Image 1 (spheres, rainbow, N blue to C red):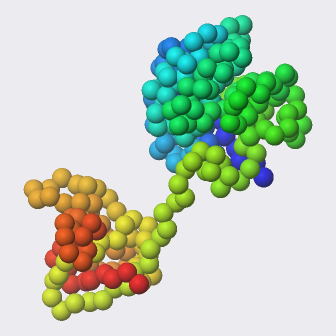
Image 2: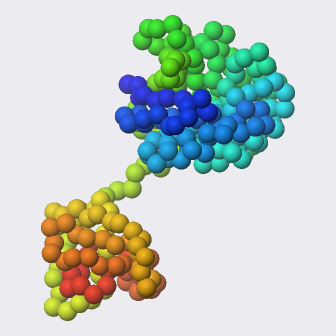
Image 3: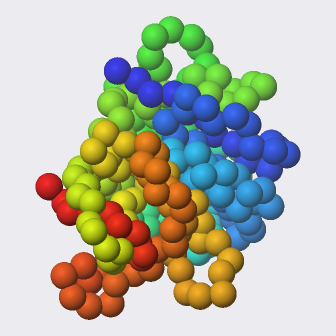
Length: 256
């Protein structure tokens, strides 16, 4: 199984559509400089909820310095990579020092290189460029394959979504909790439900936080329940400590 992705840089003035993609690599640095479009592209990738990769376009010399700059610029990225291409491409010593600095920071790194003469320089995953066509690149053991370079770089991941998430060290999605409702004779504090949870067949939706004269959390409504709108707040102590609660209705919520 393969998953689709792209890689982009300052040459893309706006972030391309990310619909249907599982990942996107964004150029973050070149040598000791920062790609001027990285912050915008990275924010849009995060907003799309897909795996964010950040890469350094490497230059020969001071691999550790280039790694530290990448770590600083792309602190929130799921994956880090070193791009090795061009006349001033990193050599083995540069890549070795780059990788050592990344590992010293507790991170892993991948190496982008053409399938021709692809080196093994201690990288943790393989990102290979091969535009010759076919069903796979001319390199065994690849993780990412850039199979087209124009007009937009297109890539594949060699595995499932779970394998991609594991490589990126992304936590599994939070479980959806199920609740039941009971109607009380008087208004009382009640547990609010996070957006997307199911309540006796109804799905909740959350908006907010909204401006208010009193402290409040997200404004929520329970679809299918004629309870209108209510503000919610976080309970400081007691049975529901740490949870968001809804005030002033006649409905209580208990987790099944």
